[in-house]
Length: 159
Image 1: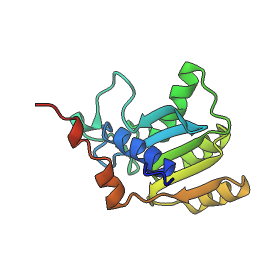
Image 2: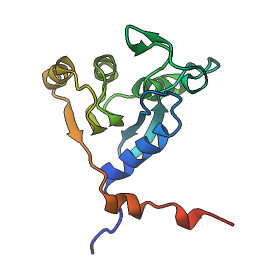
Image 3: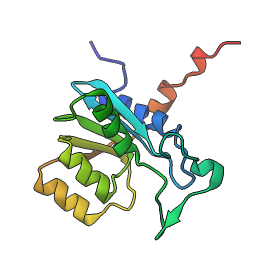
Image 4: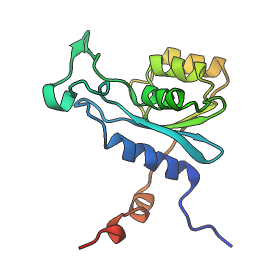
């Protein structure tokens, strides 16, 4: 019997896309979903420190071309695990955009075993080198129009 459900990779990537919709960054909306044994253990999106103003309200706080107000989605997901005592060792991450160098280093130190990403975004050569050095699997996931149509939420809307 054929399984008609969407594949796990697309399922978890859609979760990351949904998280990205909560982003408060004007420049790029990013979402990240941490998974172990096909179960979500944490999620994050890029935005300000809790209680600080948001970029969508006052604009980005740029230093050397980077917004220093924003915490990246990957870091927010890892910090959620730290805050609630959930180990990240051996977990996998689904992120809407290729992780920056700093997030790549953090993910390696946190014990992430595989990185799935949706879009290329300034893919840093040294980040790729570190992933190869540590034998971390890296896989780009695509979301076809069929999968996006199959996840329509129209049937859940009420009058």
